[in-house]
Image (cartoon, rainbow over all chains, first blue to last red; front, side):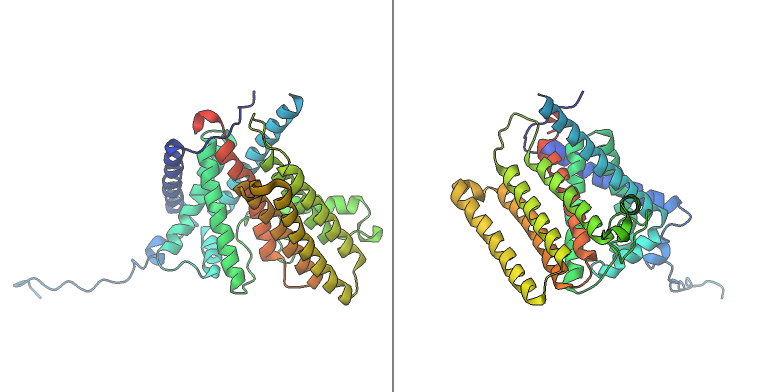
Amino acid sequence: MTPSYQYRRPGLRSLGWALAMVIGGALLGLGLNHVSSVGINMTIALGLDEPSAPAAPAAGAKP
Amino acid sequence: MRGRSAQAWLWQAFRLAVGFLFVLAAAGKLRDPVKFMGGMDQYGLVHGPILPLGAAAIPGIELVAGLCLLLGWRTRAAAGVISGLLLMFIAAMAAAMSKHLELDCSCFDLMGSDPNAFPIPAFCDHLLTWLFQLFGGAAAGLDLGLLKMNAVLAALAVALHSLTTEPSTVPRPWIWRSTLAKALALWTAFVLLRACEPAPWAVEWLKLLLLLSGLAWLVLDLFRHGWGTLRWGVLLGNALILGPLFWLALYKLSDGPSLLGWGTILRDVAMLLPALWLVFYGPVDEA
């Protein structure tokens, strides 16, 4: 049985579902990229791999 | 009610086709996200951390929306998401073209595409090539490029026909006949012009004639249908049919730059039409 089609302006419910699909899809994409062996390496792509400055030795610490 | 039922089934077919294409596109991008990120970078529109995050997120959004459309679950919302994505892709390609960039759209990397050919997915390409050979190929005077372009234009005409007719009780007179007639007439004119390869002076006159006839069509619509012509549906129909067709005709007649960008936009518009229709005419209980 085919559904009945009729003009109806999309309401808040449709908008909410669309937003949920965008957020859910984006999270799914990021998750799949994370577990994929050929995915984008976000650590490098986002520049998170730069060596951080060495922490200053605490006062009184041994050299 | 047989015709109405046939239209309903036609819409089911469009829903499945657009959903399938989006799942296929998402699968290709998920298969090689780094390549997709490189493709996005070519457009020069997105920089910084948004580029890798977007390249990872977009295939997921395409997959979810495409699956929902395939399964018929939350059709309106899924069609809305797909419409938004297609509008974004069209705007990106238009921006690239305005910078005179000749880009492969990076849409269907899994299926592959030949950037020198008219950009339709490879399985359609193989089908059309097979048909081309079946009917005698170049020896029989056929032109493969023309066959491909006609296939895309025919798909666009069918999509528009479906956009402007609907199986519900809402009356929608004359619009589809008018727009479909324009599409078919321009398509025929274009095929004939392409086939006879007119002299340069004739090409200039034909360009002028095509542009004037398009304007005359719009004015005629205004006189025939009054202010009803200014309804968004009619304006959109006219713009979508006349715009790409004129550009295709002018580009091909002028032997201008590659049709890659325009072909991509045309294909996206052909998918956008049924998606937009589903947003407004989807199952009632989902509104």
